[in-house]
Image (cartoon, rainbow, N blue to C red):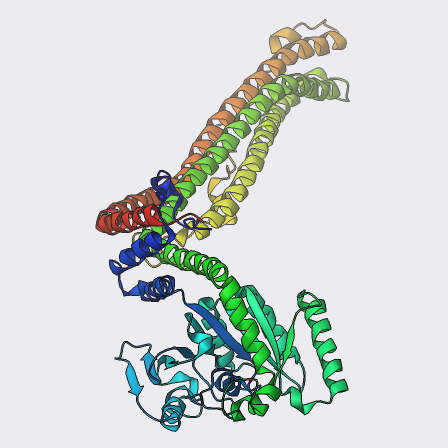
Length: 607
């Protein structure tokens, strides 16, 4: 139960692994913990008060007995009657707003303690009415609404057999009234209580509010006595039915045994008694003798077992609370450092993510370029053959047409160069078109991805002028800038007329078919030569243009990524300098609170 909280920064957890408490007595552990709290700031005042109370109770064997009940159940009257005093004010209105502690004392006196450090207000030697009037002034809701007087509690001392062995009765604010803060005050106070008397009443026997409140009480108090007050308002049969109803409800809803005692009392009759003894008719009729006997028997028989368990539990609660505050103090110093570390880690991850994305896009560019070069190699071989066949087909149309050999040769000398030019242009456009398809694919991918990353990482700079990053270019603008334009200029391919094979056709007696064969042989070799020349030229130009385009594209992609990475790297260096300064500034405070935690671990008794 007594272990350091897990919310201490993981980087420092190992600092506490070798520290554990030496075996010491429970009393000594409380004393050490109290002395330890004396060295801490005011933030630990609540825990110090709790430990001081534990020490007082250990030395005096004090058992805290809370008297609980919904408002108007007669708690104050019940305590007055049980102890034989009339110092507690009673009313049909929600009266008590702060706890009233009743303990043993030779002199009947009253002391008001405050939460804000003011000196206690002592009232002694006065009449019961004077003491009651003083209590009304400080603990009554009507005079101290929502505890505006900052009263911690009121302590009354009196001589009572019930209190002689160190037992303390606590009159708690009634719950379930319109003053909701009274309910919370009572629940908060239960941390200091070891047992409780829970007052019910015959009018009505048990409400839903009481049932829900009792659930909370059961979690906080190990021993509960149940008292049915105002039992004299019921007939014998009615009392029997109410008794059975309450016991069944306690068993069914809260898991109490069916034979849980339920004491029937009339606090009003008990208060009327001249003295608390069976011979007094009012006292005998009040039913309080049985309550007094049973509680006294419990105090004698089980007090020290109950007190030991309760005090150890409350010591554990106090120790846990101290550990929590110590951890909070350490984490308070670690928080800005951890926040800076987290921010630096985020920037580091951002730089890595940007570098990976840049590498991915560059790889994509390289793959697309290699794919294009492979296509050019394949298309060069394929198109040399197909384009040559196309040229020869055009030549055959001329030769086999209606033209004379001289006319066919003349037409072929101008038509075939133009056809070769067109086929070279077609090949080049095909390659450029394929390249531009890759350009558009990469440009769209880059524009969308970089715009998203730009927006994501801009938040690290806020309004910092160090950001100064231009807005990402849209895909359309990138495509327009990177696409390879038309390269069809007259200087690329030669479309000048070819020679006419006059010499090959010479001879008056040569036949027409022989002349056509001479023309075919002459131009077919030229067709093959020019097609190879134009395709090689187109492939060379295409490679040069795509290489230039790819270099431009990689520069266009690389530049904004490098700019963003450089700015994040600069921010990383700034954050790192701030972190080092903060670590240096907080070093002593961190060491102090770590030392406090180690010291506290060395004095806490493991339970």
